[in-house]
Image (cartoon, rainbow, N blue to C red; front, top):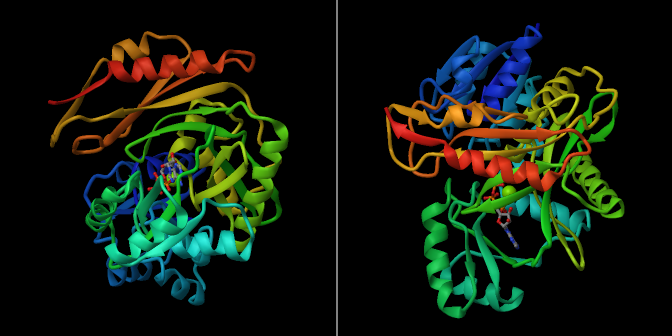
Length: 388
Ligand SMILES: Nc1ncnc2c1ncn2[C@@H]1O[C@H](COP(=O)(O)OP(=O)(O)OP(=O)(O)O)[C@@H](O)[C@H]1O
Ligand SMILES: [Mg+2]
């Protein structure tokens, strides 16, 4: 059986671990704090500073895993090249993990090398150069640290008076040692999607039905599947996803993010791993959920097809306060609703806005997606994370 080492052991890693354990694989869950969601289920767990390359090396040395599976971005992905040289398999590949952890690498690849349509963008390394960049892309625009996720350090500029503030905010929210930011023209999109894309070792690239989502403060609030859209537009997004995943190389599932606007399909960014909006697949919307697909692709097991079995929605359960002993109120209300399920991730501590669980709603394929979304949203608001 394969030994799979996870760098990052949150809710996505937890569901991945469940999928892996169901077919008898061995999982080592690594994270920066004890008792992380995946660590509660894995065969072995370890706590390290995830930005310490030497600590990562020590894990590889100790476990000699068959597969190194990053679950988060905030790790020393440059070490992955070294692991590949030593004969290890990084998922989907060192190149994919390394390029996507820095917005500059992936954006230049997508826009300049592959010619994909992206929001107009510039880079800046100081408040002064930000001012110039803003002039060039125009307002409104969005400023993001090159290394950040979940909207950290991200803000929008509507007038020149926002520039200084946006710079300072970006520096406070940046991870790692890179002070640079990307400035993007604001795309007035009609809707945005995640296109889960699966690259296989011995098979063609597959696409999940598109996932629609709504974001607040840089994190998703609800995601639903399928996102209603014209097939020609979907086809376009699929072609773009195939192009970028092929260029990044490797096998596994990818969450490719797009903005759909009147003037076309914009590639935004991608994660070379299961995507948080893809948690909607836990509502059994597909024959295999995104974690099972990732696992199959990693192990080189064939995936003959991906089929949509139901329509569904996931809505996040967020904490509102700090607690070292979070407990949950209102789950009976969720449980009493038909065609509904939920997950509580089991995170040992809460803080304001931390994602602690999801409500999952679904219906038959001929059901009404708006009703399913509304139900998920309402039920998620019934759940309160309190200090137990
Ligand atoms: N140029 C843009 N125009 C319009 N909206 C944008 C733009 N860039 C980002 N957004 C909005 O902000 C959200 C988060 O942006 P982005 O995906 O780049 O950030 P992130 O920090 O990488 O988030 P995550 O890691 O959670 O995916 C997008 O899903 C979109 O709703
Ligand atoms: Mg994103």
